Length: 391
Image (cartoon, rainbow, N blue to C red; front, side):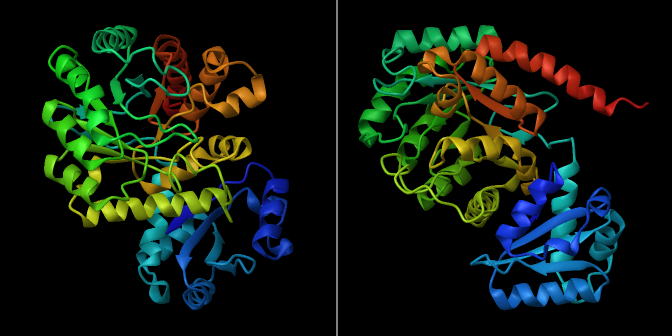
């Protein structure tokens, strides 16, 4: 799996090179400015050595990351070198085109629309997904909308505030949450979906990790599945393929009840990137059209506060996957770690992280406070559009 690695400073680069086991003197500050860094991951050690030698044989620079358990190769070159590698890969083989695709995806400001059952999601601006937890125990708004009437009213309000998608969930997946029976989950969400279908002009997403629940929700009118478990269940993939719906694969290790028990990554962004890539491949192999897949790095799901900040800082690297990027930071505990306050008192921090996410490549932000977020992102998008002006 190819991934573009952008360094914001030479010190940041040196720190990672030491951790990877790369020679610190292979790149000086001046040469960094005109170079593209690409990491090829997910190989066994012998394959990694062969790739390193093949790139060097084409006149490029490549280094095995010797301190990493998995086969990981850092490649460095000018844009022209990677263009030539794609056109004439030689011993580099299929990696040449894979590398070129990752570079193109990373730098592209355009995201292909996602087709849904009745419409398509277009990404000419940052979309806002409104959170509707029909649960008694969600970390922020648990109990607020656990009746059908309250939930429907809140959904209508979010649409009026500018929500582009309504994401309805009937099971809390906060850290330490206990599983909910599928029948209970369906009893919570299906009446709400049924009441909203045809009454709101935006698509409904079902936030579930259970295939049976997703199936029933889609039959009632939902057009997207938002799966926090990363499409691990083959049955969920069958449901998504059968309904030809949009699907979000979110990164999470283990289960909500245990995901914060042993939080460790050898290479944070690289590990999550590779696991999301594998989830995309599982879905495609199971019959889901690739253009219907979106990805979410899973802020707060098996991550520390520092991990979440690092993911926001380096979010654009996930653009290399070539799929629309959804990010959910709203009211999460890492904001409270920095600013303090209860979940309901984290509006300013939530808005800041939504803006940072949008500026770093997110296509959709998932939020509780729809109205303020819509306004903040309208301003952010206006600034971002200046980058494409023809002068």
